[in-house]
Image (cartoon, rainbow, N blue to C red; front, side, top):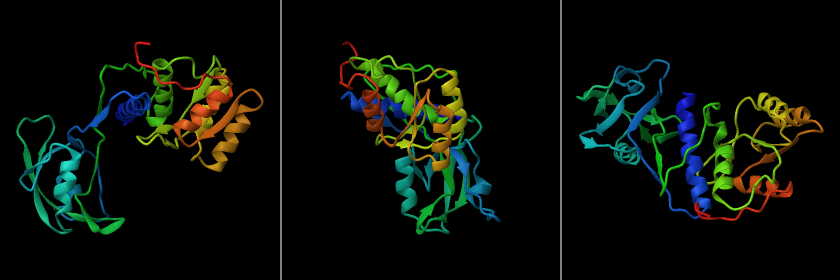
Length: 252
């Protein structure tokens, strides 16, 4: 799961960084791949939980092609909970599709909304005018999103965002530039201090206990600051002596 999450983190980081740099980029939707199944305590025989499998690729719904998630959402929204529909999937690498009959259900948080009962995998990719390579061999999970974004901005803009200060960063990044909470922040603080970081940026949405613990671990040698957005991170980096973020073309 971590390797899959990392792909998504890198894609979102590229999109956010390129948008900030004024470079044309857009998300392109991939196949509809089942990542999780929504299983009730006693699922009905024709429920998604009984008829579909993780890693199935949904190619048609009720006879209509569903090459992307938005196309699937459109056709599902026209149905009612309790409707039974034919869903074609590609399963286990097979070239020929498998057809199953699935009873649709109401969304747990909105009884008026119809769902299949799956959690789709994020298969989006980012279309950019040139290729980007990010070395993530030593990182797993989505917590590198903010770090990836800052690294790209630093590489593709003039000056140095950190001004030579050793900085550690953790947090997810969303397409709207907001930063999301991560797990194991205390362990990450220990690792950051051991690596000699003078500044550690963590998500503002971490629990108060996490933030307090991270600051205690940082002590007098590693400043710990919280950020809610990418702009927060850029502002703090400038405060510690980094160059202001100025967009530049990749060839500058």
